Amino acid sequence: MEVTGFAVAIMAAGKGTRLKSKRSKVLHEVGGRALLLHVIAAARTLVRAEDIYCIVGHEADRVRAAVAFTGVNFVLQEVQLGTGHAMQVLKAHLQLPGNRAPRHLLVLSGDVPLIRPETLASLCELHLLESAAMTILTAVPPDPTGYGRVLRRSPASPEVTAIVEQKALTREQLHSPEINSGIYCFNTEALFSKLSMLSTENAHGEFYLTDVAAMLVADGRRVVALKAESVDEVLGANTIAEAMHLDQAMRAAAARRLMAEGVTIFRPDTCVIDAEVSVGPDTIIEPYVQLLGATQIGSDCRIRSYSVIQNSTLADNVTVRNGCILDGAQVGDGAVLGPYAHLRPESNIGADAHVGNFCETKKTTLGRGSKANHLTYLGDAVIGAGVNVGAGVITCNYDGVHKHTTTIGDNVFVGSDSTLVAPISIGDGAYVGAGSCITLPVPADALAIGRAQQVTKEGWAAKRRAAGTAAKKV
Ligand code: UD1
Ligand code: CA
Image 1 (cartoon, rainbow, N blue to C red):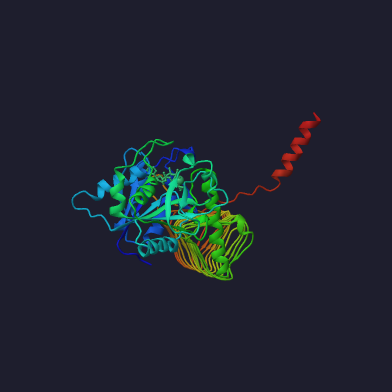
Image 2 (image 1 turned 90 degrees about the vertical axis):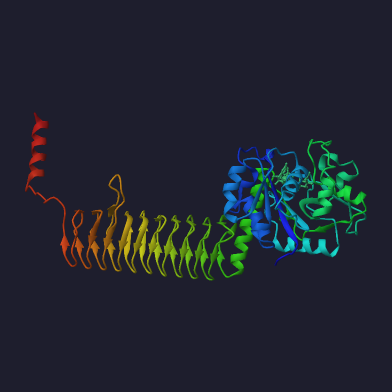
């Protein structure tokens, strides 16, 4: 889906006073990512990143840093004098030598994140079809309070006469149900011809972009409106409560999408699933699970309650028991994790491997069928296949300055409560006795025991008890 002759402007300079936050409104997150990133993603489905202009102002450096990776242009609106002023700043930028204004401009609001690409495409299409100077996206929500209202020439007419902001509504207009979404197409020349005529004589003392509608109509130019199919997609996030409402809508949509693809999600209302997450059919997701970022899960897996999985890839038939935390992990077919396992970045768990209760892994490869089932820390380790890592085993990977690697071959048995002081290697088929502190390499098929010799004193306890009894009698 691409539109030609259009550039996209995204208004993202406002402070967002109603959020009562020191952070820029457009960096507040819904559905796991900043509001502005949702809007940029929608815009990118229609035009190239070079044709997108983000108007930034409040917290401009932070906003830029957060979205620069998308490759969009930034235009600085140093003081924010209203949406009309944002367009004045854009006009000045596009008129700089070397820049070229597009024929049409699609204007989006950085705080309206649910907008669907299909809707934007329909808006652009109608704009061209109607040869309009301005085309406004509207909706009819249950409660229009707070939004600007779009007044049509007559109820059935596509033609608009004006947009009136909430505070300027007359008594009769108070009940007009159709709201301005803050999303428009403009003929760029028509828009630019009116910007210098905007005034700040209104309730907010701002330059309103919305005033352009009536000005164009007064010139006999065509201004039309398109009603969005769903109300949710044009809702703004002006308060935290509104943002959380959008978040919920996005999560619900993500869960519905996965269920449509054959995933069972018990109590989807309790799960937090980001938009980019993919899950294979016949996987079962229990209540209170979070699947975040670029997580990919195969089919026939079971993700039990209270697990949080972020930016991780799970193959098929994986069981994640209750309360696991995965971040940047790769997990092979048939592996079993948890309960309460913590897989940190660059953990690579092989097929049919087990990482059990209260085990932590980091930058560690655990080979096929290997098991670390209880109370273990494996960091900076390369562990082969068929290895048994006993309860409480620790890789001592850090010497206070540098991190070092532990290498363990195939079919090794590491006895419980052993500490492996890296850099260290243990050859294939070797045994490490329980409670060992291993500081020297262990060759293949050897047994290494690194613990103090046991001392046994026959009758010692009985004597002590007897001495105690004698003392009491005195
Ligand atoms: C605006 C519309 C209103 C519409 C509503 C839809 C105007 C005057 N009103 O009101 O008709 O119903 O959106 O959500 O446009 N911004 C800038 N620079 C500024 C001011 C704002 O870039 O100087 C940005 C904001 O960051 C925001 C967007 O423009 O992303 C809209 O601004 P906001 O103050 O939220 O406008 P609303 O009061 O919601
Ligand atoms: Ca708004």
